[in-house]
Structures are given as structure tokens and as C-alpha cells.
Amino acid sequence: MELKDKRIIVTGSARGMGAATVRAYVNAGAEVVAMDITDDSGNEVVKEANASGAGNATYMHVDISERESVETGFAEAVKNLGGLDALAHPAAIQRTSDAGDVSVEDWDLMFAVNVRGTMLTNQVAHRYLKESGGGSIINFGSISGLRPEVSAAAYSAAKGAVHSWTRTAAGTWGKDKVRVNAILPAMATPMYLEAIARATDEQTDAIYWQNLHSIYLGHEYGDPDQDLGPVMVFFASDASKFITGQLIPVDGGQTTVR
Ligand SMILES: NC(=O)c1ccc[n+]([C@@H]2O[C@H](COP(=O)([O-])OP(=O)(O)OC[C@H]3O[C@@H](n4cnc5c(N)ncnc54)[C@H](O)[C@@H]3O)[C@@H](O)[C@H]2O)c1
Image 1 (cartoon, protein in one colour):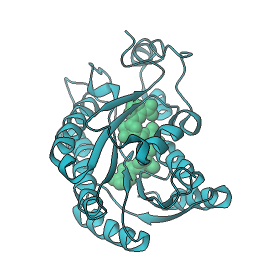
Image 2: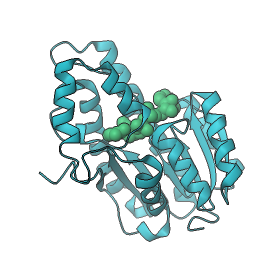
Image 3: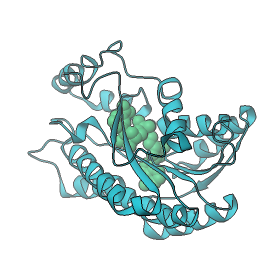
Image 4: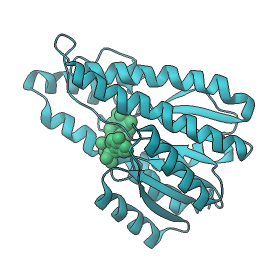
């Protein structure tokens, strides 16, 4: 019950790390509003989490790339929760693209969801967290934002922007006791499996050498419930209250053991 009485919004909750985060928070006793644009699985995730957890979650349709949707959704969520203590923000998209021919459409889509979505959700959450006397924002960066990513040029650039934003937001909102960190994960989720399925043979080879080979704890992607869930609980809890502006790899050593 590490998160008993904590009021938390989780984006991208319908699958992958967002869904695992909802389960971890409800198990730890939190009150959660889960947000996504995939409503059937979004509803299913909260139903299953509520069946076994000590806390409670409800689902809401919110498109993180649209200001109106974020403003309205967060206002209703915070009203229902009675305040806000943390935002966990895994929602994002990934597309394969090559630096030489990435289209304007793909570039703009990636930045609308992954970068503008991070700015909007963080900005609106900050307002409510400040009213609560402080709290935690947990963004999602990527190793792709730190190194060359030949098969995902636009995604890589967008994640680099999320890293910069995370530091700037941490620097701006520290005075309000709002901490802002970014998790850099390597987890076996639908996003990762879809990227593998889309890749050409050449890209699959690069993905192995760039990704699995350098996960020194077993050369496999982690399990979102076992390997990420407890970390998400820590960053939403008061135990992490002196950590801000950090890029935190949760990746079996992939990012920094080189
Ligand atoms: N899987 C990995 O190993 C890995 C590695 C590095 C970074 N990441 C990052 O971790 C985070 C979580 O990734 P995942 O693998 O769980 O992804 P995922 O694709 O499995 O889940 C992403 C969720 O976000 C939702 N979403 C997409 N666009 C949205 C929008 N406009 N509004 C609201 N919700 C939206 C999707 O519907 C989906 O439920 C992402 O930010 C991703 O970029 C993942």
C-alpha cells in the first residue's frame, strides 16, 4: 500500500507500460484515472486492475496531442480524484523512418503525439500538482533519443526533445516541489513487437546489435509488470521526492553499460 491515498493520472493506459503502470498503482493502493484513445482495451485494463488491487482505477478517453482533450480530461479527472499527486505519462507512438526520406507527415505526427503530448500533459498536470503542494511527473524518453537510431529517425528526434523538455520542466517547476523525470525503458510491449514486425532484414539485424545485445541482464527486453511496475511506484511515491530532472534507464544496462 505504498501509494495509499495517492491520486494519479496514467496516460497510454490501454496496453504496454501504461497498462502495467495502472496495475502497479492499483495494487499499491492508489486512486487512478487511466487515459488512452483505445477505449475497449482501456476499459478492460481498469476492470482487471480493480478486480485484484487495493486501490481503484477509472478509464477516460483523452488524446494527449490535443490541448482541448487534455484540458477537459485532466479537469474532470482531478475533480473526480479530489486533487492530483502524480502523472505517469507513457503514451506515445513509434513509426519506422529513415533520415534520408522521412516524410513531413510522419515527422509532424511524431512530434504532435510524443513531444506536444508531453508538453500539454505536463503543463496541465503541473497546475494541479502545484495546488496539491507538489508531486511527481514521470515522462518516457528512450535510448533512441541518446544515440543514432537508423530505423526510426523521427521517433529518435522526438525522444531527444522529450529529454530536453524533462530537464527544462524540472528546472522550472522545482520551486513548486513538482519533480519531473523520464524513464528510458527497454520492455517487451506491443510497441516493441510491432517495430520488430515492421523492420526489414537489415533493420532486424541492427535492432539485435543495437538493442538486445547490449541488455546485459539477460539480452532480453524486460517484463513491464515485473521490471517496470515497481519503479513506477517508487517515482510516484514520496520515496523519490529528492529526484528531479533525471533520465532513468530501466533497461538491463542497455543505455549506459557500454
Ligand atoms: N517498449 C520499449 O522498450 C520502449 C523503449 C524506449 C521507449 N519506450 C517508450 O515507453 C513508452 C511506453 O511504450 P510502450 O512500449 O508501452 O508503448 P505501446 O505502444 O505498447 O503503448 C502506448 C499507448 O499509448 C497510447 N496512445 C498513442 N497515442 C495516444 C494519444 N494521442 N493519446 C493517448 N494515448 C495514446 C496507445 O493507444 C497505447 O495504448 C512510450 O513513450 C515509448 O516511446 C518504449
